[in-house]
Image 1 (tube, rainbow, N blue to C red):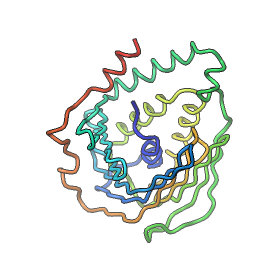
Image 2: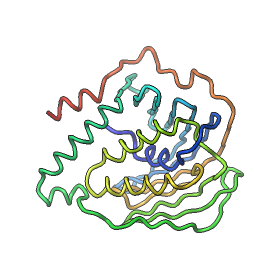
Image 3: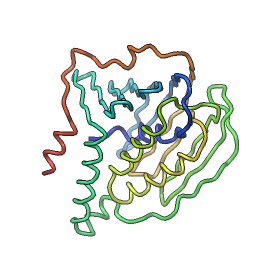
Image 4: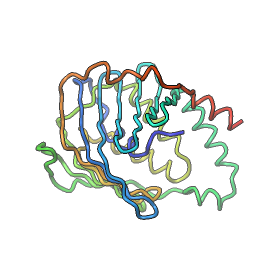
Length: 247
């Protein structure tokens, strides 16, 4: 149903700003599971004025956001399948999930992270250098959540600010309970930071412990083929399917 949370957090960390040129960032990623296992790999983030694409080499799954059409595509290469969801369906799913949560007993809400965890605390902790680029370090805390970022203030995502803001609000609204409250506050604070994070470490949110570190940053033009969907994959309207199942 949802884009990987790590992808959401990375995109959310990019400040809403004026349009800039194409941008490609390659990251080393590491994520620890609840059972203690660690998954490592490479993630490539592509930004243009219309698209944002995340390529996860470990999972063989790409996420493509088309801001102009208002559609999110999850491209599963192993299954040769594309799952699509419109921004409108994402909003409807968020609303339906919130209504279901309201009807749940308190103990079930608590299991899902019900309740407010307090205010978000933001602190600038110094400077850093990542992929040869000077960065400002920040620490964001809320309850048990800790998000540590090294942000390059000279980098700007080129997508349309209004479409980007709409997408990020929809993503935050789609997470129920205290985790959703945390994500909304995290989105608000990350949106105030200028630039793009090149090093991140997130822990304490829904059992997550994940990190990213940029190894290469390129500002050259991205070929249109990067944002072209595979023509031989089966396409499924995941948004319509999920909405039907929730009735």
